[in-house]
Length: 288
Ligand code: ATP
Ligand code: MG
Image (tube, rainbow, N blue to C red; front, side, top):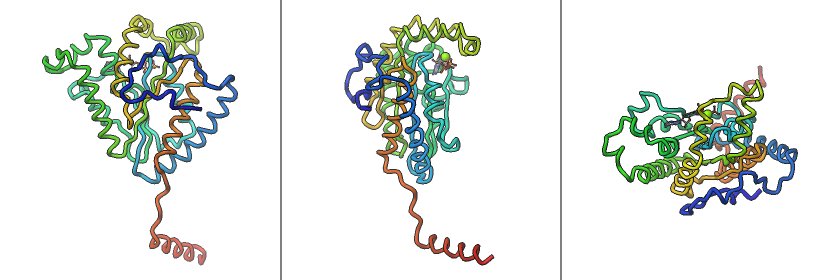
């Protein structure tokens, strides 16, 4: 799969209308994609083992999307083969009073993966330039100085803060991938209806999601702006077609595997001294 066509190049202006949510690249059926996903899950498990043993780099994976785009399912499937000790998932909802008493990156900084681990952000610091931008009352309710809240350049400044922070992380060994799962408004409606129709999906339904859908165009504009401003060489955004869940999962797994393969991962080399001690230990065990 040519993953490059999903990457937003640094400095380019994203137009979501030009990204087909229903694209399935050269895959025509689900079976083939599921088989390739399985291969990627196996590769991911091996790569993650090396990442952990080497204990130098970590990988932060950001998921952003409209409701019902399939973030949870993508995380569940793509990570299904990975040692649970090597992954952490942080889900970000509306901030708590304690979180609002800090700068907006504080809670995200605290949730970063340690070296050797893969960290997943299910929603992220980007909500601060998405939901907060679409709903100006949320910004007004934040505990910020008035000159900050009312600064007409606030979004541009937040983009800069985010870019700088992500570059800082990269230069400390934390590599970053960012996924926008691009579901169409039509498919979102189908998925909401399924949540109403099918009893085992009822728990997922939230009336507020339907209300949020009313702001669709504002969200698309906010996503276009945020992604255009923050897709960088070291922290790239990928816009992933999300109308077919099986394709979303495959594309995401492919990008993560290629990223880890590019990271010069290897098992730590054991010094000669330690090797000699292994031999001593072998002799001891064998003489029991
Ligand atoms: P799902 O609906 O599949 O369970 P979700 O990620 O939509 O997953 P919810 O609990 O439904 O989880 O929604 C979390 C809500 O929190 C979203 O509407 C999101 O926009 C909101 N949120 C996240 N970060 C912030 C923030 N910084 N400020 C205000 N709202 C936020
Ligand atoms: Mg939700």
